[in-house]
Length: 383
Image (cartoon, rainbow, N blue to C red; front, side, top):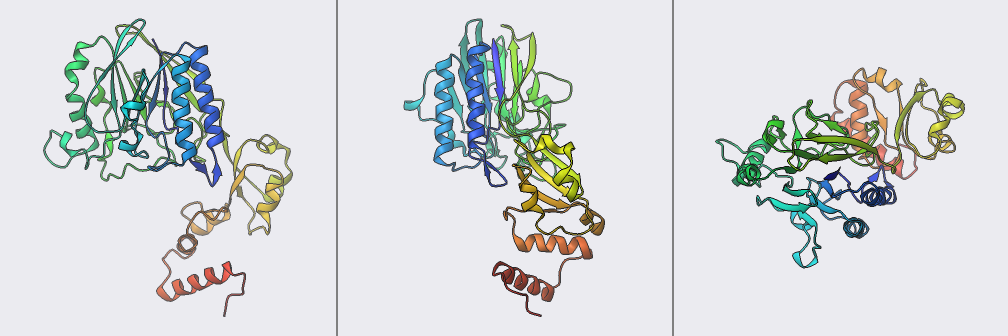
């Protein structure tokens, strides 16, 4: 049988306030096309279908439409809730379910047996398990962790796994050894409690993971892997985006994987050079169209009107920063959020700390507040 492993669609998400739903729908179109052209038997969506618990109507319609078209194209679907989804809301009411669609958001353990032309497949769809909310699944002593609740969930279906010739786990988790990017939301645990060991999935024919946006195998085991998000959601996601096409034998012993490039989304790039070079140098011509661009200027002073001039060349430039601030701060790069999405006072405090090495005092903080207020009114700052 053939499994198409996807995850982290994040329908409804924007990139620095640039809507992405059109590109996300291009991705779902590709999934539907692959079902027909590659003979896909099962499409897996390993969590974070949406970007927030209450997604916009357009994102919900895109999700329902994708499910319908995937089934019409001839594949079954298994999807789970991720930490961005609200589990109870992502589940489809039984009266609306179509044959071949399994969507799980509730924490109650339960495996599903799906039938295919070459035999059955036991599927364990494990949505994101918040250790506090799912602490009843933890069989160990002490505070529940993501590891302990996953172990408890899987223990309750172990007999079904043992009796099945092959098995698939769909899980939204941060497996130890995985490489994260800038765009995943923390699983909100401290002291390593959010991490799980790959050994928790021992004995499973294939583990389709979601949460980390970089495509990667955990350790050296092709049977435990992240497919990554279908399109970039941060400037750290420079790895090519792909889907994992998994061929699994009837007894689960033989497994082969093919990576299929995603044909949607804009790649991301960070280019660092002087302002004049970024405006005119032919080396950067490939980034003028269909790239999200972060420009880091090496000029020793702020360039007036830099963003406006760069926009005349790069359609997708959405972030601007200055490398010289690294040298001033002596610690880390400072980017300017040109879209206004960040709290101005927070940005001012961070810049103050980078330059002076300390937080602003109360009088200095009051002056910063006044400067920000006046700045938004286009007035001069009082002496």
